[in-house]
Each structure stands twice: as C-alpha cells, then as structure tokens.
View 1: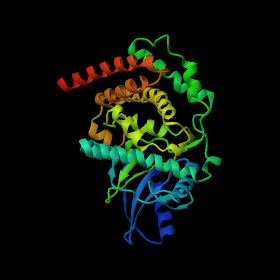
View 2: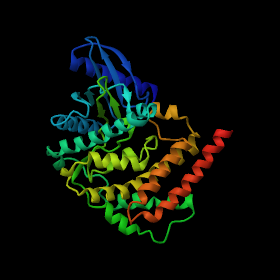
View 3: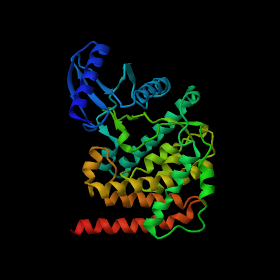
Length: 342
C-alpha cells in the first residue's frame, strides 16, 4: 500500500471512529505491523478499539456478522462494536499474542496454553452450531479444482525428498477430503491469531476467511503452524481431552480426517516457507513471531516436517508419505546446522 493510500485509509478510519463512538481519536497503533488491515485506536474517553478496514469490504461485513452471531453464544472471540461504511470496530482481546507467549514458557504452562487454544476452538464451533450461519456462509475448499490443487501439491514434496511411493492413492485422498461443509471453521487458526487478556483469557480473532467445512481444519491450522512449539503427539492428547462429541463425528473418524488434512496442509506451509526463503532469505524467529510472518527459519521448517511425518503416519491413506517428510526434515536440519556454525 502506498503512503498516500495509508494516509487515506487512516483518515477514513478516524472519521468513522469519531462518528461511531462520539469521541476523538487520540492515538493510533499498529500492533500487527504497518501493512495490516487492523489498527488499535485510543479514544479521548479512555476506550480502546480495533478498527478494521480491509481491501474487500465484503469480508469486513462478513466478519462483523460472524462475530455478532458467535458472540451471543461464547466469549472466545472479540466483540463486534459496530460497522461504519467499510470500517468494522471490535474489542481488544489482549496485547499478548499466543505465538509469542507460548514460546516464552515450557512444561505445564505451555501445555495449559495449548489446552486453552484448542478448547476455545471447540467452543467456537459449538457456538456456531447454535446459529443459522450454516445457511449463509460460503463453503470452503468445496470445488474439485481446489481439492486437486491441495492434494496435488504433494509434487513439491516429491521434489524435496526423492520420490513419492507408488502406494500413494491421490484419488482416495481427494475423496476423503471432499464433501465436507457441515461445520463452521474460523480458518487461519495460526497461533498469531489468538491473544491473551490481563485476566489470562485466551480469545481467537481474525475471522475474515471463515466459512463451512469439516471443522478439523481449524486444528490443522494451529498444529500446522510452523512456529507452534508442541510436539505433534502431545497435541493429539490435547485434542482428545478437549473433544466435543456433539460435533457430529466419532472421535476416531475426526482424528483420521485431521491427520489426512494436516498432511497436505503441512505441504502448503513447506511450499510457502521455501518460496519466502528463496525470496527474502532466512529470517529470525523473533521477527517471525513479532509480525506473525511465515516461519521462514530452518528450525521452523524442521518442526513442520516433524508434524507432517507424525500425522501422515496416523492414516493408511497417507502413511506412505511419512518417509518423505522425514527426508525433508533431514534437509532442513542440515541447513539449520550450517547456519548455526557459520
């Protein structure tokens, strides 16, 4: 966005805020970085609000609608404070981003944050089932082309790891991942999209890409966040403990679907990491977490390969791909070792 466009956007946001709240804007901050769509406004009367102005106003209105609907049934997301034109206002859910906080702690505290994050996802899904949003929201990843591209990205892993097993049945995987549109999904449940308030309550934000699908995709986004530090097997235990049987699936079927979907989600993350590393070089972990950037660090690539290997091994449809992730992990571990010794 050009400087003139940024200035115009800020002027639009300020005018909308002062009209809506009847109070002067006395401060503007961009916690997520200058290029993000949301700004934190301080008002003369002491209140704070996030103002969101997205390039696509339809997404802004969709997000406002979803926050309002879900907010009637759960407290695991921001409150929608109103919409003026193309600007949405929402409550500040906290200054402590989950991706940063979970990296600071270990042991029981890290485990507790993971449990809070997963439990909140299941509560959001349950809240959505108490609304009629399923009649209005778009179905995500619903076309054969989307499925073919999602599963077909395995070719990238082929190039990285020396060949895909002949046992891999792409059509069977495509069938397993198709035809699901019964559950609300937030989408983009990376750990940088959750925050913790002063009372230590964790909430998820950024619902602009939400829609309908299976439901396990939200957990795939969290576990498949390359900056997420918990071991993949540990996350299975967290999911089992938080599992909501009213979601419509037996837990065995739910976990199998999660494993298959997550296998290919990991491939997408690996593609992104590799592309960005080629373009920008490797980045520091601190910078990545601060700006909620793609995990362009070889240690993060190693982590996501471990996630891929573990979850691929959990389903007969994808077990033959586990060695490919293990080979990719060895490659990224070599890069990490080279960087550390340089």
